Image 1: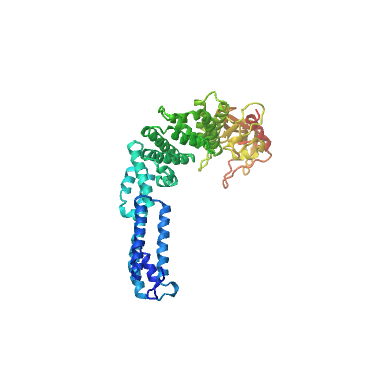
Image 2 (image 1 turned 45 degrees about the horizontal axis):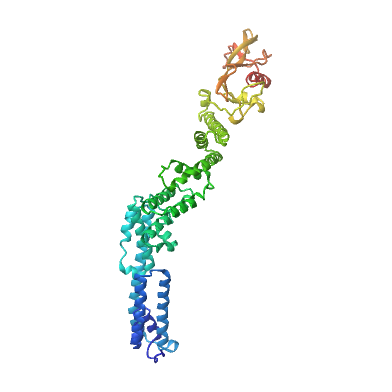
Length: 504
């Protein structure tokens, strides 16, 4: 076709053709072109909406739309055409409503798809199907490929509901995208297509399960079971999906592997190909259980670690890893004991002796209270005495200690000597002063057993009868020195007294 005379605005004609109503050709008086182009446009839209609802045909329609715009521009004279504001306003008045309507319908279809996908993720196939029923024929004209995805998802949901296997939970790789990623499975006949849709969903759920999501695993196995029950002859495909899942085990995280093997072990046999999944449990579970115990040990979660090791010993008592599990039980148990002892040895905020002194506990990891020692001890109750003991005798933490010594308040012990002293302000008054050892009641406990050991008290010796004995005088009243005083103990005397416990 030859370009028209320069009596029309090329931009207006191009905009008018952008409406897909061929108004641009009508503005030029090209009736035959309008009819022919209209026939092609109608055929493409009908094929897209009713037959081949695919993205590639949408692209063909888009290219046809661009060709109509370019052709209208060319026929109106292109760059040499004149400008007519009125024609442009008419073209915009026709095209804008069409484009807005198409855009709104595509947006509305996407909204419906998104709401349905959310219902899928929440495991509500009934609600998802209800939402997808909101699609109308007008949505076909605006976004035909999307309607295919939604319809196939609705069909799969209906199959799952009929099979009694509605999903407990669908993860981010929702059904709609799963189907879109496997278009080759959609055109194999009604029965095969439905089975393939559910198998695709099962495969995706089991892929998610390999990240440690046991809920996704339950959903995936439910879908595989639904295919076996509802679609005869699908055992081979089910086996293929199952093999893909089992081939991904064990996982890098042993605790996640243990959860999977636990579920597989507890899964009731169904007398079908899915029972093969239980065969991997004896091969994978022991290492997973021990590895999970080690993971808890590294995180200092001792009780959980001990539970894992005990589980292995209960389920696989003769396994080659049983020795390691026994060692783990012992080590975790000692760590639990140590944590308990540490708590009991905390000094109360108001002072005084820790709770351990009245409620001793066992820490079986401590060294036995045996031999000459020195047996490192934690001393409570006599700070001054503690300062005078060698550092090699003392421990700051029960992990390094053998003994816990709880020392009470000092009392007068055995008499060492008695000496006469004159009163400072009444020389005629002579008093006899008894010098006595410092007696300290003690409770010594062996950490390893929590049992009390050693003497119930110690006595600290020292010098007696100094030349001058200081004492308290109240004003002008001098009653003389007290009748009993402690001996003057040196560091060696304190050490000698405690050595009976620490170096028996």
